Length: 116
Image 1 (cartoon, one colour):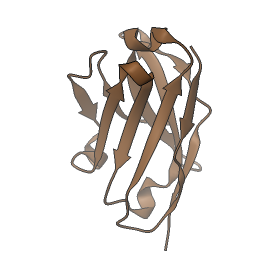
Image 2: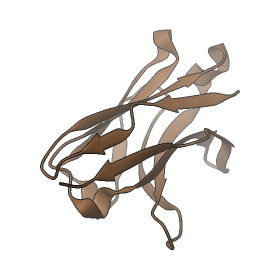
Image 3: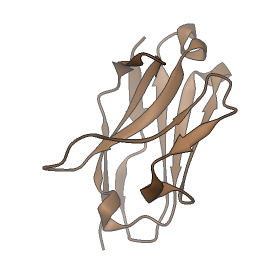
Image 4: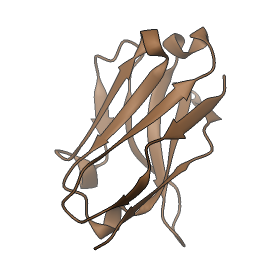
């Protein structure tokens, strides 16, 4: 399955942004999905994940209460709603599809820059 992210851009501190990740085919509905980010000079970090049916989400501590992952299997799309953004959230954001064995498919990434 191929994944395409969109929705990145420049936002002021305290602002919000919603990223989307759309899959190429119906297999999307069988995969757990996740969002990751990588800031310059840092390792890629798992931001959060969502189960196949969307019933369970998990987040890294630094984004809990600010970021929300959701999915629409009919649209083959997973979302990352980001609020209360800070400059520390600046990174390239990637979505990935997989399961218990890891993340098998990755998007190309979308840049999020938080700056005044």
